Each structure stands twice: as structure tokens, then as C-alpha cells.
Image 1 (cartoon, one colour):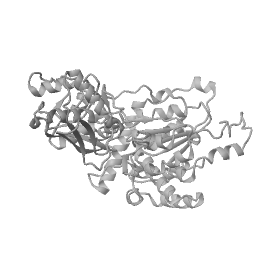
Image 2 (cartoon, rainbow, N blue to C red):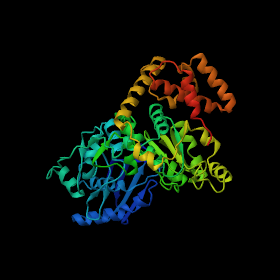
Image 3 (cartoon, rainbow, N blue to C red):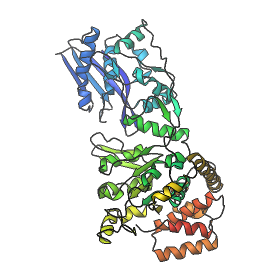
Image 4 (tube, helix red, strand yellow):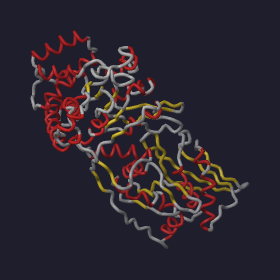
Length: 503
């Protein structure tokens, strides 16, 4: 008796189609799972035994061999429980083979036969839909599967209800609450008083997608500014939202209450390891850089992160992807994020303040700032100082423009930016200024002769690297876009150079 059903395996966010083959033959009673299963899959035997017993079934006293093909791909996760159980039931002629072949199946079994939620429903549903297949998943995750556009979704709450559905004695009705698309913000830029230069830099970063570093004493509002960047960014497109939701689904962080078009904002603690930031570990899970894909990664107290963790950001900052190398292969996760970092000028935080001098200046500041490597610092587009505000100024100052007002300016500038770039590279071209290659920004920057002379002479004086030169050009182009100007003027270059300050 041989049966086959389909289920997914995950390599990063890529779905690999796995055939669960079950052979029941005569011989000494044995239940074996082969095909490079991990510990969780090997333990599925006990869960399946208990689930069958809870339904009043018993496995035949025969040799049961489960093969997970392709056998040379490592399989991980508890979502193999349900497809293995269904394949056994199909081999025993309890469930018709011709019915079950039209589905991809995944779910974890409880000891009572209930079906529990698992990771990866969204990418599995997308893959199944592209193959013309339906999906069988836990009842609690039907909305997630349907959101991917797959209409052939079955969501049983237990193994028994799935058997009864295919026997015709019970119909699984997928009455569900559709997932809503939400755009909610709990903070607003209007809450920040003063800090006009930092707000301007944040708006430039939002328009061009630039990386930014804020330097200032403790308590001046660096974290407040960073947390409000998503409120002024344009909402995600449907494609971007799907990419973000797929990563969250694989990571087990996708909310069942609704899908958000608010860009991700990740703020890991400075004790986070390299693996926590870039991904990896025993099961090569996505890290913070991937969870921040299409959004913002905020690193507070930047020099307090380990040098190994910070230097691991170089590849994703340049390429928008992160590769996790393992003995059995490489896993690549998308990691196109916007880095916003904050730091104190020195360990005590008061270096450079006239009324509160650093007790160990300038050695304290030099030692503290040197924790950031030159190559990482060179990848940051905007460096802005955030100054302290006196209590009297806090009382007198007003908050300024709201996030909605600033976001409308950002959207208008981005639309101008995209129209300009499409004139150069065609209607299918979709990049922000920060992601343009060296040749692309050279061809499309449109600097005036005076602006070129200023940029070249300043780059020579400041000893900018080639990367720093092009980053300055990109920032100047973004400032011109904010002014709705086709040409980059000397003023735009001058402002961009001011943001290339040394730490």
C-alpha cells in the first residue's frame, strides 16, 4: 500500500515542494521516517500514534516507512505532522487518493488529534496557487491562506474533521473573518519640539531612502525621531506588503488580526548578536535585517553593539540581501532596509557640551567613536548632530508639522523622483535615489557645472572615498527632488556635504 501527498519545506522564504511517500508492507512492526528529517519530524511518530488513538484508530501492526522526497534536502518543522498522518490514512484507504492529490498539506498535530498553527502558511498558499493546487492548513490560519489569493483552502480543526470531510459525512465550512489592511501609528512628528535640522535630515532620508546616523547627548530625542520615520514614509505597495508578510509568516510573526501596510520598524537591543541581526542559528531563521525588509532598522547606542555584529551589516547595506552559509547550502533572505542609527558623542554622553564637560575628553570620545569601523561609517549617507534643548525652550517651542503633512511632502517628492528616473530608464524602473548604482546616479543626477565643481573640489578637500562621493551626489539629488528641481544646484551639494561630517 503506497500513498503520496504534497507538503512544503522552506529554504529561506523559498518554498520547496516535498512529496510525503508512505509505504505500508508486511514485516516486523516498525514506523520509520527517512529523508533527512530533523528532531521535530522524528518525534511526529509519537504525536501521530496519540492522535490516532484519540480518534479510536490504531496503526496496523506492519512496517510503515515514510519517505520525504527529495531525500537530499534537510526537512525541518512540525508542519510535517499532518501530511504524514494524511498519507498514512490514504495508504489505508481511509481518505481517497484522488481527492488528496490536489492539495498541499501542512499542520502540527496535538495528542488529541487537533491541528495546531504552524509557520509558513502564506508562502505555501502562494506556491500552491501558482501550481494550481489547494491547501489544507489549520483552521486558525485559513484567513492567511485565503489572503494569498488561493480559493481552494480547507481549514480543519482536527484530523477527524478532515477525514469526515473527505468521507462526505461533514463539510468543512471556511467561514472566516477577512484580514483587514491596517495603517495605524501611535506616534507623530508633531510631538517633537525643536530639532529642525534633525527633522530636515529625517525627511531627506524618507524621500531618498538614505541611511542616517544621529549624534547627540542622552535624552535629546534621537530615539523619538527614529521611531517616527515610518509615520512619514509612503505606505507599502501591495508587492512590498506581500514580501514583508511572507518573511513574517516564515518567522512566525505574522499577526492573524490583519495585514499592515505600515513599514516595519525593528529596534534590536545593543546586546543583539550577529546571528540575531543578520539571521542564522540552528534553523537559519531570518534576522532583524530581514524582518526590517522594506522598512526601518533602528540601532540605538550604535557603538555599544559588538564590532562583529556591526560589520555583518555591510553586505545587506550594499546588496539588499543577506546570505546565511551552512554546510548543506546557502540560504538568502531579502534585507532591503533603511538604517537609522543613534549614538552619544562619548561614553558619558556629554562631550562637546559647554556646560557639562566630559571628564576624560578628548580620549573618551575618540575611543568611543572608534568602535564604529570606517567601512561601516562610509556606508551612512546622512550624519546629523542633535543638540540639547533647555527646559525654557521646551516650554516655548511648538511641535511643528505633523507626520501627515510631512508624509504628503515625501510622497510628492518621491513621485517627482520616480517620474524623473523613468525618463532615463523606462517605465519599469523602480528605485529610490539611495539604491541607484554609480553609473545610474551619474547619468540621472543632472548637476549644474557649478554644482559639479563644488562637489569635486569638496570631495578632494574632505578626502571622500568613491562611495562617499556618490553618496553625496545621491543626497544632493534627493534634496533637489524635494525642491522639485530637475537640476542639482550648488546649494543642494553644499547641504549634502554638511551631512558628510566626521563622527
